[in-house]
Length: 354
Picture 1 (cartoon, rainbow, N blue to C red):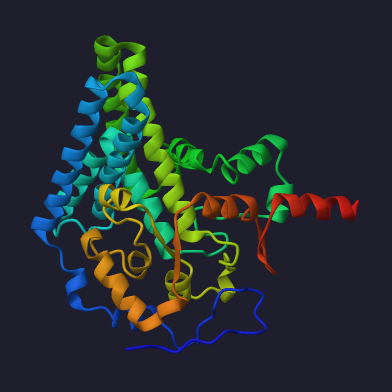
Picture 2 (cartoon, rainbow, N blue to C red):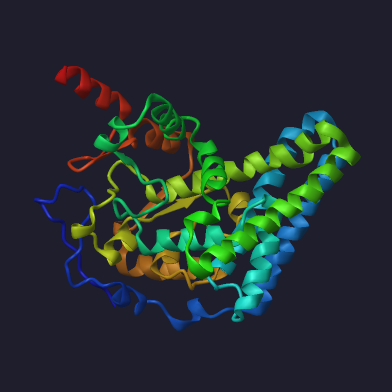
């Protein structure tokens, strides 16, 4: 089944626009039932692979000479990102059929990352419900020019850092500022977030003194901090690449279309195969936005089927320095006419006005 698309010549957005007949349920009907089926053997194989790979990484860190440590930090931090992907499936209830299993495995997978499971789950599901909707999406949404201009210099500097060559620290700030404040949640969600946050805090209160006592300050840096930084590098990179390109807009609610945002506003990015293996195909992102119920091990099949129907209209790229340079050089502030305005162009416009 295919649904035709057209490009609206008068649209202020350069994203390919679809006819108003395209609905998310129409896209879902193109996918076979098998992509939604949870497979217990595959799910637990993913868990086993991550445990083995992380164990190999830490074993290498324990015995390798100093000149091998940078490669092992990269390997171990990337393998730890696989734990996040397992928790990611649990947060979407696509790991197991029973909710308590998803919650248990999700908390255990997130604990080594010091990530409160329920706060991430709730905020991330909000992102899925409002993908690329201006004013609602909470994943790398650009500041509007007016919003940016209204803030003090420190906020502007912080925003500039996370939109520039230091994009990879963005996930750390997101983690620290949003995920431990259960006061931002209401009702049952508040108690869930409080439980997850206190669990992480309690785990850290036990784990870090033990680490300091057994391996010292250098050991904490070597075994925890640097692999954790690599993990956040991938968290920041995956999320910014998934929804950011010079011609992918964040759209105000009156013009926002759910099907269009999920199908054409999400990006599939090819990484080196070892990264995709360790991170369980989280880069196969478009079908995940069509339905978060698709388990990670079925994403490639779903993507192939989407390509059969929409082909070149889907956003695909390959991870490279030039890709990240393009994003971090151009995708800064929201622009209705051009999707994004760079900080450089913003300063030029400001100087011209003065």
